[in-house]
Image: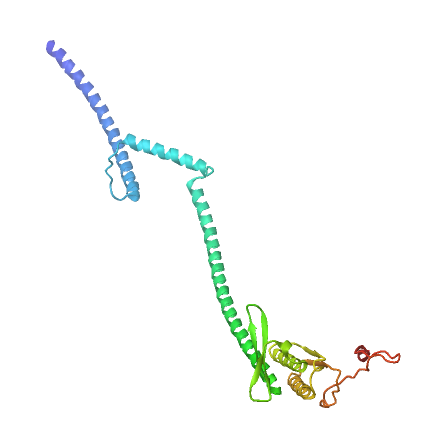
Length: 286
């Protein structure tokens, strides 16, 4: 009986062990399935990590330190988002791109304006230098013409321009009875006829370089002698015929019968005498 009892115990134990074996095998199957799932997750995580950093890192800090750093970074990110109006990184990047585009456009506009300004300055400098050269040319030409017109009476002279002070001085060398000439700077020391002739020569030389549609002389020959007056009229008429697009008007109280026949002469009545009114130019325009 003792043997039967022990045999029954063994059979019961064997049965329990078989049942436990079935349970353990089932648990092993479940664990293996979880291991397979975890291996898949590990491979996926490795692939993701490899895309971020191809080289495997060997961290020197603990997990807690990394968590603390991450927490600090999150706090900093939240603070920066609040500082930038709650915008996230994508919004900030878009705003930066817009501002960068605006800055680039403004920078290009400024560079273009600076280039244009430099071009204009260079052009202005070039024009200013050309203007000075042209002014110097006309100064010299005017003085040469002044001397040429004076030479019609045997005199000579020059014009001295002070361009900084905007002043002009006439220098006249009068013809004397001998070969020597006396230089005169103060025209007040000249006689009336000499001063009138020098003034006429000055006007003629200025008319050579000044575009004037009308040119008028009023009683310029009052103090001239007959010879000087004849020479002056000859030069004036000669210059007038060369410049037919300019109107020359000469007013004189003297006889002008020596003028050419193609010169238009308007003769006015003398001042009022014996109750007659003086004739004016308005009478000819009526």
